[in-house]
Length: 514
Ligand code: KIV
Ligand code: ZN
Image: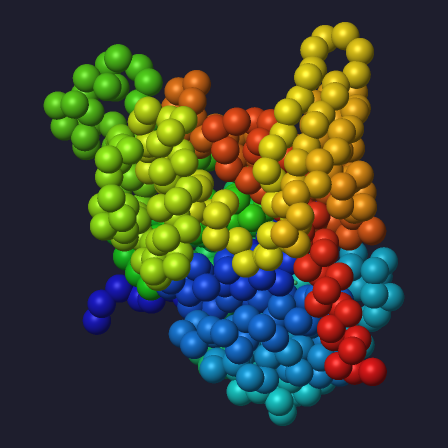
């Protein structure tokens, strides 16, 4: 018998999305879900369908788009919630209803105002209702680690009897410790008589920085599903980080003889895609996916690594898809070389995409001596947006300094016209925004603004990321450029174009229903 298989349940798009600043739009969720499928996760929790129409649509789109993984939708143990989840999931190749109810006294008394008996009845009814719709049902006992163990055992036994195929034991508030959690899972394995009819799942929050350690302890006690998120994003301090759990299992096979189905070479790409979508980057020293995770700074370490990488590296950067940065191409490189380089980086470009990428690449070569892999990825992400470029930047000129207002002159392209206008503000970006608002008649408020160099050198490509509130909606604007003024103007226009696209979609939806 080989090592036991651990199912990886990814909740980046549900619990992860609940973390501040990490909300995503439908297209972004879909892009992330497709990458999670490539990563090889077993289950994708796509959202909480009853929470909003946006969540419902995202779960439904992901359910239709994915063929390999199980797609789960979260719902409270209430008939209307469960029905709404099923409505969103029913076209999935492998649907799962994930229903939950708190079981700790503190939640029952103060949040739900239910007795233990009432909660038990509600959990069982919820699971029965879900099972009548879907053969794959997960039940989560929210705040399980602060639930009295004998009551938790009774609830788990009852929901399995009612048809739950997976039982999740969340450490909702990140309170438990590895030995305590090990003992709790062991208690369930030993004391719930029908436990072998369900998969035990664990779901750990990171309030004490123990989410991954707790998840691994639970596996050793008998859990066979781990709920986690890419980059460890999630409520408050986040959830167990998928990449850490998976790599711990892979690197420490000697102590943890379990396997996951994750293609670890896709980890870096998944992490970067998420950061690119949300604008939230992991801290530099974050395990596995931080910028410094494979950097050796001290002379002694560098010396050791040069002699033998194993002196200071317990896994190779390549094993998680991190490529060692090197100069890749120059201005004399042709389309075929570019296509091959992108392919090596994991991007198979269709002809029109390659054409667009090549144009951006040659433009970049005019301003940048050395083009790094990170630059190529950044221009690709920038250039291949699905949003129509209703307004396009032709020119942006800014005068700014330490005294007085900044002034901007902007020329845009729109419907074969090239209008220009001026604007001012108390900084160069504010002046650009003022000029663009005058030309497009779309005025937004910038709530977050970040610039990040993707490679090395003063001519590095900078990724500009902003969150803009336009007509009550929060939109992200992104652009990559070697020029911060151009990048800022294009990132802002990206948000404006998204607002106009959303307006158009809404109008056409209303026309269909009218
Ligand atoms: O943290 C938690 O308890 C949850 C459940 C809904 C699974 O996210
Ligand atoms: Zn959670």
